[in-house]
Image (cartoon, rainbow, N blue to C red; front, top):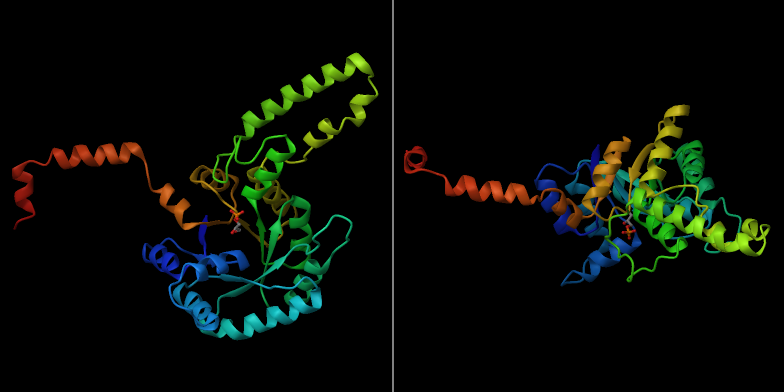
Length: 297
Ligand code: G3P
């Protein structure tokens, strides 16, 4: 599995890249904001992004800012022309659907992806939350799709009645099996309550409907996308995104996802293990003078 770094902080990109583990970079407007907020001095955005592109010899995703296909295509062309010459590695992030409310039909993202594919500008369909969205983006010609694992998990937990901050936080591990069990028990409880009243109400119970998510977790979305892409031999690559902890990285690697884009602090978690620390202490303690001598020669 390739590893992209999910940050726009140049310091983090440079540091992780120096370890030889970075195959690409993903940014978005929120990550750019975080990076700029963390800087002491004002910077030229153009120079800053050019430095990111120069630093990594792998795809760098840069996101458009509008919602209409026409505008997004113009922005994509601008970003591509401005930065692709630096290291020939720019990929344009296009939201798969740019609607901000439920009652809008919206194919702007898909239209933009299709148009950019014809211009040979590579795209990364972002904010993908379902296998169906991934399939449409792949059909339209996206080079990458980015399912947002952590946000899918947040959504499922909230639908199940769990409260962010009280029952889980941003980095909590999403235990797919445990949550399935809770879901099962809660379903039985609701059905028991309703049966006493009126069996017909089971079918209209809002709480039950809330449980009827078609996916089990963010990792499950990746698993399903992988299966669909394999079934139909789509060449689109899967970037598992919105990764919140190291266990998720391991689980997406097991699904066969092509790429995981990982925040710097999660990469730091991946290298840690209590038993490695303990082993280090013991090895260091056990160094005998005869062995020490070898290093003095
Ligand atoms: O790669 C997408 C990522 O930056 C979003 O992460 O944790 O804000 O959902 P998060």
